[in-house]
Amino acid sequence: MAKRPNKLHIKKGDTVIVLRGKDAPTRDKSGKVIYTKGRVLKVYPAERRALVEGVNMVKKHSRPSQDNPQGGIIEQEAPIHISNLMLEDPKTKEPTRVGYKFIEGKGGKQTKVRYAKKSGEVID
Figure 1 (spheres, rainbow, N blue to C red):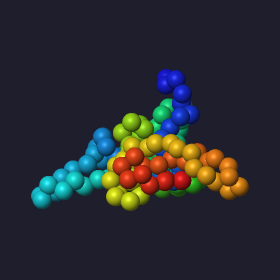
Figure 2: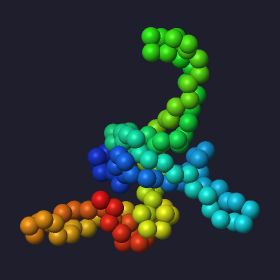
Figure 3: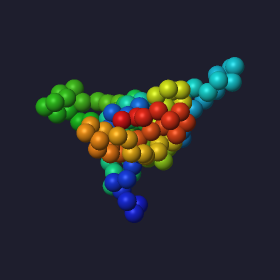
Figure 4: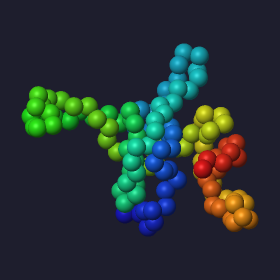
């Protein structure tokens, strides 16, 4: 296990880009990189994984139940490792690393915020 499982660069609601796995970036005929993007639905800090909307889709076989009387095969998202994800830069819409800095908040208070290393844009 990781030493500091709570210290992740991704939070719920962030737009992330997948770097590795079956949803890894591809190139079109002109050579432009096509990224798979998605919104983070849930973060599992202890396992260092995140559930991303529309990414890492798996088929799950379910028996008939009260919720799903038909049963059958359901397609759903599976958690993906944090190391395979990178935050989307709000300005350039490309993958970026995340930095932390303190800015002046209300009443002269210091507030710790995340910022995109590529453009310097504040994320939250």
